[in-house]
Image 1 (tube, helix red, strand yellow):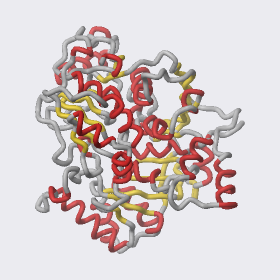
Image 2 (image 1 turned 135 degrees about the vertical axis):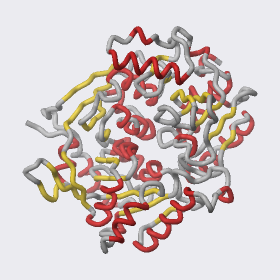
Image 3 (image 1 turned 180 degrees about the vertical axis):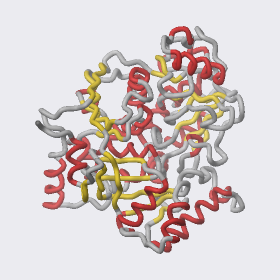
Image 4 (image 1 turned 30 degrees about the vertical axis):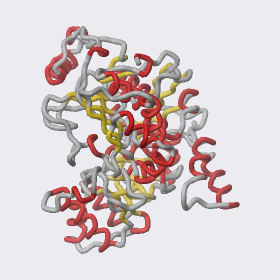
Length: 466
C-alpha cells in the first residue's frame, strides 16, 4: 500500500519513535512572533539552555504592532513589552528578527513564503494555529503551544503523535465570481468546525490544481477552522514557478535537484486515507458567515437560518446563542444586513492578489458614507507592490484607509484596530467568535471581493450586486 504526502514528510523527519506512539520530529523552520514567545524564552534561560539552531529560526513583529505609524507604539503598555522582550531574546540567541519598519517585516505566515523560507517537504512550526497556511507549498506546517516553542528552541525537535489522514478532493472549477475563501467557508459549513479533528487535510482535485499560490494559502490557512492540525497541497509547476522568484533559492543544477525531489512529494495512487470528502466546486457561490464560527456560513444569496432547522440539540443551542450575539433574526436576507466597517487583511487575505481583488471592485466607486474601510497589507513587500501598481490610489479615491504598516491588525484586535461594542463588520480574516475583533463586535467573514462590494453598498453584497 502506498503512502500519503503527509506520511512521507513525517517519516523523513522522525528522529526517534516511542512505543507510546509519539514521534520525535526534526524541525526545519521555526518561526516566532512577539505575543506567545516571552514565556518560552524565560523557561529556556531559566533552565540554563541555549537556542539549538538560531539559523533555522526567524522572528517577526506582527500581532499587536500598530499599522498607522511606528510612533503609535505605546511604550508603557503590554504590547511594547512583548516586542521589547522578543528583541532582547532574539539578540541574545542570535535569531534574525524582522522589526516593525523593516523592509521584509510582515505577518509571519505571509513572509515565510514571500522570503523563500517555506519550501516543499519541510516541517515548519510556529506558536500560531494558522501556520497551516504554509502547507500550501507541500510542507507540513503546524501550530504549536508555548511549552512546545521552548522545546523546539532548545532541541530543534518536537514530540508529536501523528494525526490521521484526510483527503478533501475538490472537483470541477471555481466559478469566476468566487474565490478560495468561498470554497473553504462552504467546505467548513458542510463538515463543521470539528469535521477534520484528529486529521491532517490534503487538498486535491482539479479545482485545487488550478488555484494560484495565494488561493492555496487561503485554503490551507483555514484548515484549522475545520479542526485539522494542518492542511497541505502537493507541490507542482505552480509551486515551482512561485518559488523560483523567491530570495535565496538555489540555481542551476542545485535548483534542478531540489525540484526533482519536490516532484516526489505527492500521495501515491494507492495511498489510503482515513477519511475522504469530495466537494464539487462547479456550483459554488459567494459565502458569508452569519454566526460566531466559520461553520455557521451560508451563500450570500440566502437568509439567516432559524435554530429550528438544526436537528442536533447542541447545534440548535449554538445557533440560538450566535443569533442573539450577532443581533440577527431568522429569515433576514443576508444582503439586507448593514455593516459599520470593512476589513481587508489578515494572514488569510492580505497578499497582493487579495488587494488587487478588492481594488478591482472599488475602482471608480466610493465606500458608503457610514462605513469605515481599512486595508492592511500582509507585509511591507506587499504594500510596496501595491503602490507600484497604484492600488494605493484606488483605495484613496474610494475612501478606504490603506495602512502604511503591515500586521495582523483588526483580525486579532490586539492593537488600535478594533471594533466598538455592537459594531458589525465584513472581514476577510479567518475567525468570527465572540469578541474576536473587539469586545461585543460582530464579524461576518467574507472574501476580499465581497468585502469591497459590501463597503460600497453599506450592506453585505457581492460585486455583481453593484
